[in-house]
Image (cartoon, rainbow, N blue to C red; front, side):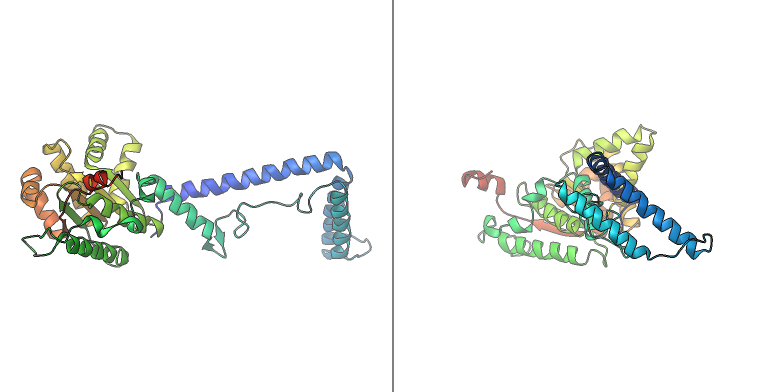
Length: 329
């Protein structure tokens, strides 16, 4: 996965600011040391002067006596270290201090992205996902099959709620595993509180942790934003629409809870159609039955989804209510 230009530029601005800040801190340390030990300024000037004189000698621009530049620099550096120590300064006081010693705050090591760049990219993607905080608790590490009963059986499949949940998790993990090699969309449906949103969050965390761009919207917020952008000619609105259409994974949660009208249906079709055409994956979750979904959003929308999405139904008792009875949140 490659970052969008705006995301990459944002990260590189952070590195530039880091470099400027570290340079400023070094300049402050130099001023402090020079004020307390005036001889240090002389030493730096002598090192610079010796280097320039050696260069002139090598280029034949000077008739002076040749000398060992390395030995001269070592001699002056040793004097500098001694003076710093005598005045209580650490040995590296006049050296640049990098936030990342591996890439020296450039983001790259041998033309490859540094580990700090990858961490910064993931952090940025978390921030832009809209669900940064919730993913700390809603992830596969906290997914429990204990809330799914063996006694609730689907008449359509003959599988229990727990078996259905295990199958859904398996398919979710396959979706993650094959994300970069196989284009797929997921349609999660079932009654309220059976874990659809939780499962989509699990998927989101795994993909963000591998530096994929994931954006989460509740259906209400998504269509409200589309409405604002439709009547705006600002570049920001255009960028946001493009961002929604181009991100690696778009999650539309609780579809059917928004105020549905012809505008919403047309915007939904536009969104899912654009992402299908560009082979960008989408996860939709809804409490609606398939029949109600078709009636709500039109035959055209339902046909596009049913032909391009993997349908995953979850069944069972409302997990939020179960947690309340167990004293949880």
